[in-house]
Amino acid sequence: MHQLLSPTELKARIGKEVVLAGWVHDVRVLGGINFVLLRNSKGIVQVAAPRKDVPHEVFEKVTTLHQEDVITCRGTVKESKMARMGFEVVPKEIEVLSRAAVPLPLDPRGITQASLDTRLHWRSLELRRPESSAVFKIENALVQSFEEYLCANGFIRVFTPSIIGGVSEGGSEVFKIDFYGKPAFLRQDPQLHRQLTIAGGFDRVYDLGTNWRAELSHTPRHLSEHRTIAPEMAFISDERDTMRVQEQMVAHGVKKVIQECGDELATLKVTLEVPKTPFPQLDFPEVYETLSKLGSKLPRNQDIDEASQRALAEHVKKESGSDFFFLNRFPSAVKPFYVMKVDEEPEFARSVDLVYKGLELSSGGQREHREERIVAQIKEKGFSAESLKWFTEPFRYGVPPHGGYSFGIERFVAYLLGMQNIKEAVLFPRDPETLQP
Image (cartoon, rainbow, N blue to C red; front, side, top):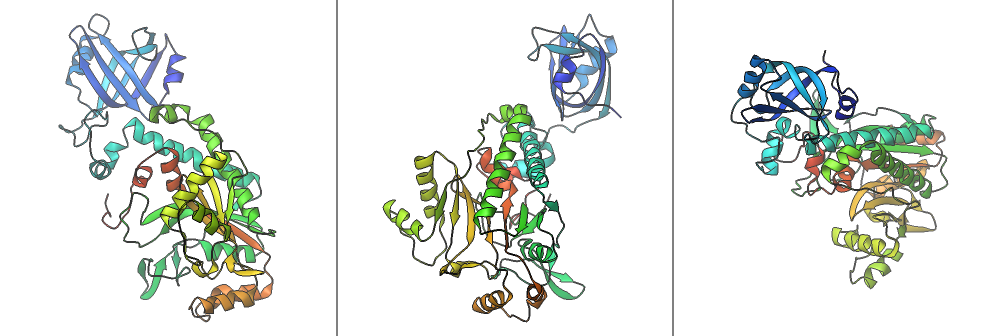
């Protein structure tokens, strides 16, 4: 197995022999000296083959290489003022492991531009672009740091079902599947099973996994399959406790990306700052008045629309400088049955969205833990109480106040990095038209 060395590690080995492995990013044949830019997951390294300094067969082999051939190169690391990184590798031996077909359907150098549809169709070639691979290295660091924060604060990871026997949120936006001859669905959110885990005596858990939503949406913000990280916590005072956990998780994640992904951020030409906490908070019904002052009218007891959400985001940014804010106490009429209403003001629910740059990142808040009220809200929403007994019956036997949120990973990555389309932050995105690759 070949050890892949980063440019920093190679620079520390000037004067020593190394073995490199990777893809031919580019070839330059200049007569007296030939160059290969060799790329792997650690970066791009210049291999310089002067005719007078390398074996004849090595010099000639460079001329036969094509872009995206896979090779190994044994050579010596030498200091070079002409090389971009201050060093290059002078080869003693080059072995071709795999030849790339010519011409390529997509240029990983990015010199020849391609549409997003083409880049997603040839995703494996697209991922070879440093700009593309940087996105997923940042995404990995972000998710690791979210888990790091949660684990350090008493949360344990659990795995809840992706196949469910009933619809938890209503509507028709679910994927139906055949489960041994019985109807079943792919989950929209690991919500109810997280609550049942809390009912089982766990006080802090989180789920990290895939959710599905069968929306016929064709926007840069929607996916049919997406990933979330979803904490749930018991013994909370109210929904604001979930806000404090969420904002600290986000701030910790951004800080880690800044610390650990400097090269990737530079590749993408993105500069980040750790967000200040606590995040601003806007509550209903005051939101109606704020929107009215901003020249936007939102009918009472309706869900917030995109235009109103963007107007609030601009308002918060102007007032506080924050790209983040919490939207709290949504009208209970537009929220699922498991959300707790405000006892003294039941028109509104203890329901929280985190908004970032005008886009909803998460939904959550405090859940209803009182069995009789859950059953009443199920009936109020038009569901069959009998069909949801599997969920409600454990609440007869003592469940603490609890709450949580489900945070969209790819949405956050896309907007954090200034992307125009969420699909760029998904390895192999699924939408109403895309089932392959």
